[in-house]
Image (cartoon, rainbow, N blue to C red; front, side):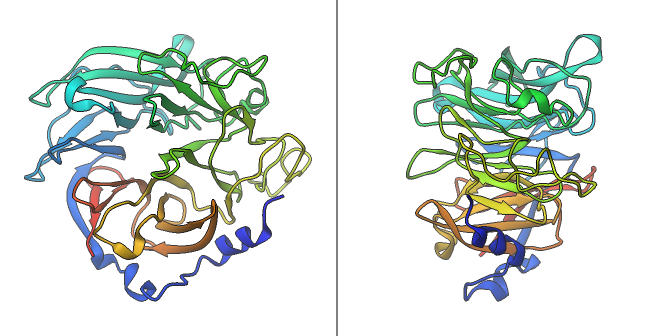
Length: 369
């Protein structure tokens, strides 16, 4: 069972460091670019140019002059409904040679349905178009809703691509079934194939890495271990931090520290069960965890190796200190500033965040020491 002190830490959410008084000051946030419409993810090209996705379906660039480009051409149609649309972005690990960009999106399907899909395309040298576009993964089954697409992407050290999905809000019964992609972590090759070291569990689709997830909207590779870490939305309370391991079951909706929005228990109200994993950390009340990054730069030496998680519901940036795989300290930064949809480390060593707001208020902001 999860250490109750972990839950208490998230309830208190207070700083235990000497720099707390100044670290959360909003004057540390510098606007790099604005005018965005619900930006969802960002990635950095080798020269520092920023690629930004907008949920409505546009991919844009922000150059060193901080000017926002028009939409990049060549993207497929997206289902911009509810939480769906153009979502995460990741560069090929060898982007300099391949120029391949990977994007997750809510893809329109037959009969008004949709599902999380992943495409790749080759970014032109002038940054104006994606070419040789190919969809390499399609979540099954499709569904007609507009919620819980999951949809973070992360390349591991072998070059395999992790793809997170959600339970589509109303497909909970499928999460514990292993013949579908609902509420799963998926692991595929850059072409959409099956990595040879994927878990081989009887009855599981070969692309499934782990099961039992509600709505994973954060994913990052630990810089030291190379392991995948994720954040996951609960319902009422019970947001989770995990590091999903191959072939394991993370419990949703059988076990959870969450409750229905009505306040009623979920299922039998269990928080543990044999054969199901405990989260590393739980947030109650829900913070709405989204994008995440392990900080490895030198701009903020006191934050070295800390984990940063964007909070949508409680509008802050969460700073987590890990020791031996456990959260030993948590701090809220920039409380009330905005819904932070994504956080990344730039090649200049700064932290960059996206604020999830309507145009023209959607912004890229940078944390200045």
